[in-house]
Length: 369
Image (cartoon, rainbow, N blue to C red):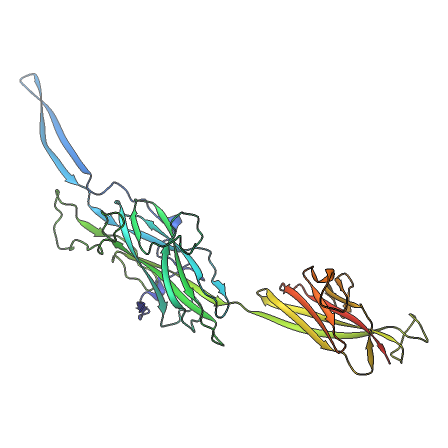
């Protein structure tokens, strides 16, 4: 069972907006500095004169070793939630982990979900399932199942950065909107390639500095739901259900009648009427796999091969720049992105997608009996 974040500690520590809430922005990072264990030695000299003679003498050599300063930064990549669909599997959120320690480190990785909603992240109302964490093995920034298998960061050099993926499944449940997740990286002992070391333990603050011992000092900052100087850092991301608000508008206009022709036609028997169905998507996401059906109204006869699909909607008029469809559902006209047919009772049209704020139309014509 995954670890859970139960306390909204340090909510006021986050000063960013949206999902870009990381303990340390990469642009503000300091470098790791002199490597831990390096010996620094220094010797002083003094010059003086006695009875007109110049003399010098040297001090003893003062030596100490550089202690280990544990620091790291975890950042979410992209700045926006991962848009997902209900029931989708292996959905990916992406992070980076940078080793700001002055030594090579392992890092243990945890994926957490929220028990409480964090206003800066958006309302959390469901949990993802089958949550996994993987390290980008080849540095291409893209999760590859079966390739990216490592579940911890192994022997990361000072100032080096790796990409880490949280991979999860989305439940097929009605009404869900967003799941907030976070990646927590914990400094671990290095030294044996291919093996995750135990969590690093800081030297007690009450222990006096020893010039011959490499002490361990935690130097990581605080962050949202994160304590300072604990050898850990986290960043947040979210899975958000994609949404598209699709609306239909249907209009009818008389094109001609048997008495007036094209001049001021009226809806009398024998008149030709064009129906225009406009498909509009208010967004924010693209709507896919759209099928429009329209039962032929009574007292009208469908005009064969009058169906057009995919034209740009303009008011209540179908601009006839769409795909011209014949009456069946097979043939060359079905090989383009749009499709359409008439089965003697119902007009059908298919559109592969409708982009937000770019309406598409379906048009066909009938004769009034």
